[in-house]
Structures are given as C-alpha cells and as structure tokens.
Length: 197
Figure (cartoon, rainbow, N blue to C red):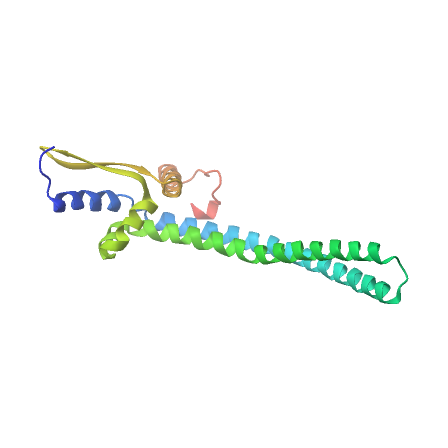
C-alpha cells in the first residue's frame, strides 16, 4: 500500500460522515411522529400504572387483614405466614413493575431524539467534537467504515448501523412521497391528509 497522509484519510472520513446528513424537514416529521407515539405510550403506561396501583392497594388490604388474623390467633399460624410471604412477593413484583413503567417511554424517546440529533448535521458535529469523542460518533453511524486508497484518491465504503439505516429509509420514503405530491398536486396521496398536499 502506498504511503497515505493522515489528513487525506481524515478528509475521506469527514466526507462519509457529512453524507449521512438527513434533511431537516424529514427529521422534523420523524420527531413529530415520535412525539405522537410517545404520547400514546405514556397514556397506556398511565393506565397500566393505575391498574397496578389499585392491585397493590388490594394486596396491602389483604396483608393487613392477615396480620390482624395472625395477631388474634383466628387461623393456623403456618398458613398465615405462607400467605403473607406470597403477598409480600406479589407486592414486590408489582412495585418493581411500577418502577419500570415510569422510565420506559422516556428512555425510548431520549434514544430516538439522540439518534435524530446525530444526523441533522453529522459533518459539523464530527468536526466540533474533540478527537477523543469522534470514535463514538463513528460507531453510532457505522457498523463498518473502510477507506480505500488508490492513485486517484481516497474513498470510503461504509455499512450503517441499524438505527442510522432506519432513519435513512424513512428519509427516502418521505422524499418519495413529497416528489409524488409535487408531480400530481391535485391527486390524494395515501397516508397524507388533503390539506397537507
């Protein structure tokens, strides 16, 4: 392999990263869609939390009755203790599930929004990052990035990560829909309200 200047390789990498940019219109639509999905998820999570909280309250009442029965000596102690242990395990499982339901929609939204932020202007982001952080951006965008050096210059071949690939596929669909709308301005496009055309 001929000698290669580091600057030459770095420029090829910057070009490859800059090419991952997705137009702001597409990203705005994706973010709006994410917002709608998150709102739906949060509504469903609220219902789940309410149901779990009611179930937890019922278990607490049952537990209180069993403790009273144990104190009064109305029922055999081994059976009461076994039932109390079962109730304690059920309560613990519900409390754990309640803790998980609060975080899941927000975590998913934050990850999706972070991914969108990476492709708004990845070239500028890459150049603004300290050298020590650039590798993380490369790993977020590409599963593999190879530089091919020849007498005519340096070019790159890359394989996108699943998330980056999904964003680009959405971008392609959006662009195709927009082009179709411009080609036939009076014709309704499936999935788009007439007032959006």
